[in-house]
Length: 51
Picture 1 (tube, one colour):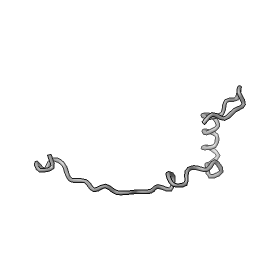
Picture 2 (tube, helix red, strand yellow):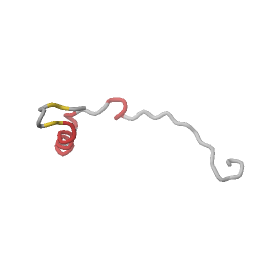
Picture 3 (cartoon, one colour):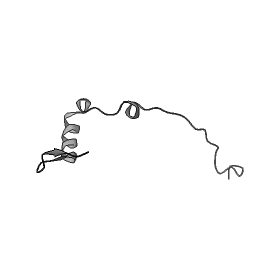
């Protein structure tokens, strides 16, 4: 297909993202993000965090 001019060759790049390298810290989240995190991962009945 490359020979026919329909596709172009590719070049692989090694990219390191801060998110992947350092992760996400709860204290760095905005108040809205903290609220959303709590809604998704905290069970009020069990009073426990689920990850």
